[in-house]
Image (cartoon, rainbow, N blue to C red; front, side, top):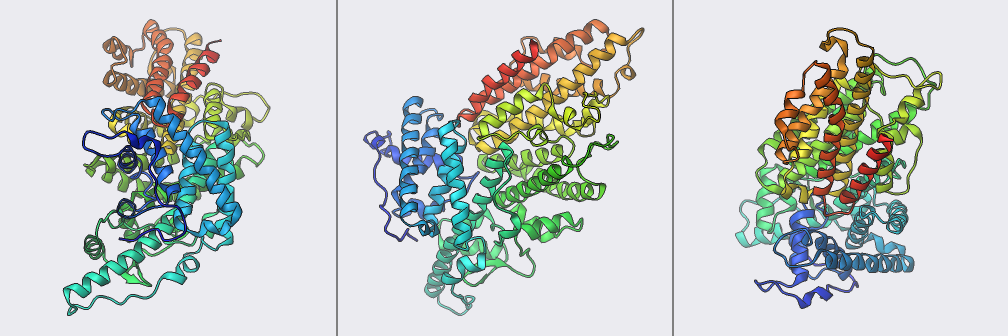
Length: 587
């Protein structure tokens, strides 16, 4: 098997290794296994087979153990107290950051080593989503330093980064002996692992650049145009445990070996993230590209994140223009042509994702494709409901702070004020424009709430943040609809009908119907039947009761969802933010 060949200290036992499980596994092994079981599917950065059968550097092992400890603390039957796990985890992270910075300050070209970049990236993930101000400051510095180093080393261009160690391997001859073919397959597999490891590191950097900075309304540091790497290949290739299994899967996926690495053949898509995005926006999508994305949830996530970044860039430009009368279309951020292109790309990607969600049987597959589904909903909703922080020019210094700010803005949107012509809020009588996507809103709410405990445990922290933003959009939409109905109810005389309240009554009942059903599944309602009976009623008393209770029921559901995402501190910490915002709104 390949090994990590450099002068880095190899793995050493941690303080937890004095404890063993009933089957004789050390605690380090338990936490490493927890990492690969729960976190690795969402971020397949480290090659599992290589890591588990070689002697990886201690820095890489320690951060994997640190992340694994977070999952071990939430996994029944492992026998580790949560407080002790979290304390040890944070200690390993701090020691790792200090050592990484020491090595980089001595020679910044150390970041050229793939294991070093992997360690650096995992430390960024940990620090960004563990809700600590000092962590966040160090993470921003680490992310900027890594981006600078990657640029200076030419690692953003695949042809530059891999030309020095990618010899041309000939195709296997049919008449070659079985032993010769096995040797050749093994050699080609090792080259594939080397190049794909670096490729996944670069794409992880792009992903974190977007999800760490954009969430706080900071523009990403890297443009997709400057990243000239082909998209990640099929996950089945990356997860192959032997050279023989890898070669068989390579043949199944119709890959040929070019320059020592499997590249797309003439029947498969060959291109960078930017060209893949352009192909999707062309409205004549490449079938081979869609097939390629269906084989790699990580590649799909990168494409969706890039489309999201594109929409955010358009939104920034749009809101720098002078205010104008409201566009009758709910999709008001882009031009009609741009909206058509984005929606066309979203349509085909959503179809692929929906098919994969429906066919996934393993928990790991269900979790990663659910994550992609969250991003498709988030992207579609961002077309007609821009981010309050982005529009308001509010820049936060960490992910958690941005989510707290967004929570407080939910009940009193900054967007309306920003776009008003006369500096006075004007209520949108059409449900804040969200009637066009109410089906997507309720579908997203239902999917997020319905995620069971085992899949919630596997949810990556950046998807938790994206899910929370979706929940805030639902809350904001319900809040606006409720206020609009109250206003019309006070002015209404005589018999109440659906026409009395316009689209707001449809939005209210659609959301609360989903809340009622989701709460029933989570056993949050003491009397779900009474809540169901109030829906779609135009009796004044019943309607007032629905209005009074509806937002509280939604907030209770959001609180339970946040509590269920307990591995990363970001989940439970948002509970207080929700409760504080609700208390402020009641004043």
